[in-house]
Length: 256
Ligand SMILES: C[S@@+](CC[C@H](N)C(=O)[O-])C[C@H]1O[C@@H](n2cnc3c(N)ncnc32)[C@H](O)[C@@H]1O
Image (cartoon, rainbow, N blue to C red; front, side):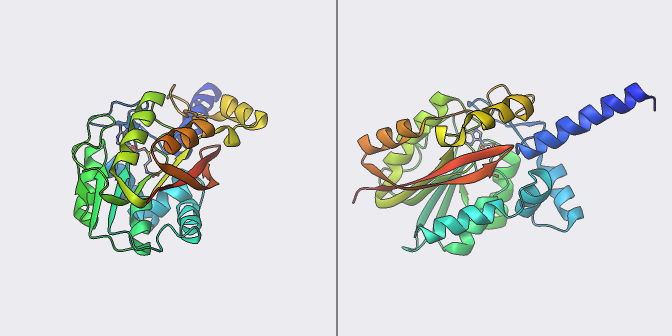
């Protein structure tokens, strides 16, 4: 291979590595009304995880994202905040993808029902088979099949930084609606806390190739104020790694 060929291949592999670090690759979801409509390919990712001898979630953390232990550290923070202490009987997760948070959530609690809303059909099917969760029809940003005030823990991880402002906002109303009084709502967003000038420079120079809508920012105050009007109070916030920087995980409790 000539020098030019080597250069092209280095750029391609650099882009691929970066795509991996953002949690994305090249496969199109089946029914996505948000912004970024790709998610990592099911077969290839499972095969690569098997070859590496890792559970798929750990493979994504360690190899694809270059953030070993990231999922577990978020789960550890949530445990320390008492999110699992009441033993949630019903859990709902938006955009579980590979199930890396789902699997670890099920190590923390034993809900009788775990609903997922996931647009990538191969991953949703896998999660139903592997964990016995209930995949709800996922149309845009609605949780319509789930009744009001029926879920103890509603969560979404690394979803609202990949969809448009409207998609995230519409899901926020739905999350507050389905959570039962006293229940918890957990999600991460790329807030101003995650966007100091140096980090903006890093994103601008190194982040998000191929996905104009990734990463999407969401003001922290907008979330806090909106959820307050929906009867949900902010309990805590902490940073979690994402791509070249971080998102902020927000934990709300719906007023009893
Ligand atoms: C960056 S991935 C995060 C996956 C997983 N939560 C994790 O942290 O590994 C975003 C996930 O949201 C899903 N998704 C995208 N748009 C969605 C929508 N409108 N409703 C539900 N899921 C969606 C994607 O298919 C993908 O599984």
